[in-house]
Image (cartoon, rainbow, N blue to C red; front, side, top):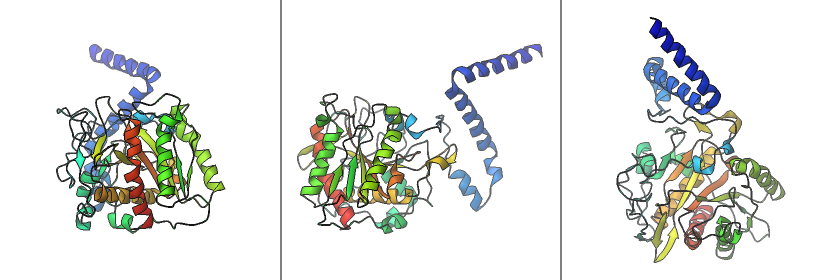
Length: 385
């Protein structure tokens, strides 16, 4: 009895120490306790249609990550995108029928492949005949099929069939009218403008993701006739607060230019040094592209009220239409759409896109090369072709 009492006292003291010295560990302990209670008692709390709302939370037993809710930009972007599906895209498999999304973390598989499922360091030639890769609406209306083939859902968040209704998303009007007026219609900016590539020169915007934005701006204007404002401001000198720093500047641009209808936040991803997000389309090596959405909702706590985004469905419609257009025109160019818990300033405009172009293991030229097909895909969506 005395030994049991001593053990309880010891464990209490240990927890108290960790509470002071490691808040994250205490949060994890709390999260595990809540998870075990939910696992034990949730089936008793709901029945019939109510039961589905419990299971929609999709809490995984190995998901022990606890997310502090003070500020969405307190997580570095590496942390935001820390969990990836190593089989996110199958560049050589246009139909994507055999994608295995059962592995959730980069490098956790047993095969020596990169995130495209290809041997590390290699690229794959991809056919680009338009119309050959159209997916039937019947398949897209199957929620399980949709999630497996078009999305990677980070374990920090969850989404269910009521929020991801394909017909609703496809019915959203994502078009804009071209104009002869000299007013901007599209804003391109970079929350993390300091992000560079394998051959970038640190501190030189002409070799960073900003140069990729310059190229996208040029093509959209010269080839497709859109008026584009490219904001080259640097907002990530303090990377952990980049989204908070960028927000008022973007808001000011939108206030000064009410003609802007589309906002694109262009990034460069961060991956393992052995991973290359590259493909070869029509003989041109280029970086792969990924569309990213924030859901303003965590698996652990539900909706994040102070990060409200009234345009989540609009944002999801934009990324899905872009993904479907990419699948049709340039299979293998895009990875699966990534869904994460916060909002990433996508609440500032309904037609918002957060786009990852390659990673630090790509060359700048590979990222720049990807802008030609990306611009065509964007024109297809914005023109409603």
